[in-house]
Length: 72
Ligand SMILES: [Zn+2]
Image 1: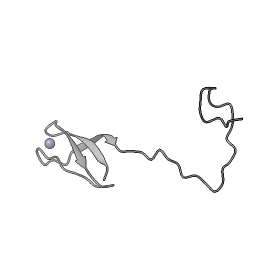
Image 2: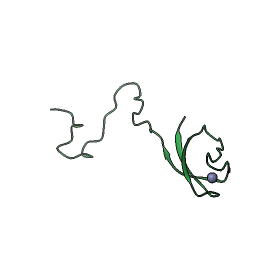
Image 3: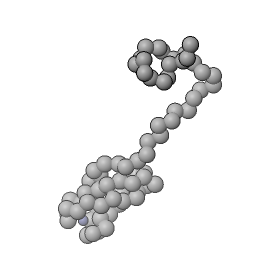
Image 4: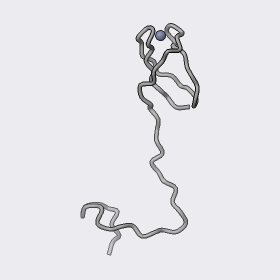
């Protein structure tokens, strides 16, 4: 489950809670449900699933020092 940071509007405390999607947590301090989500500390998937076969990448998007350029 992702970790979210909430701010309680009742007691003014911040709390990091593990909540499922579409779940409404309550404040661990005062039990209030008036929590506003501050930010999400979620590890976003940085790896994209490659499609079948390797398509030609547009050249010139990176600098000369970039290693993405094909050798030769
Ligand atoms: Zn609270």
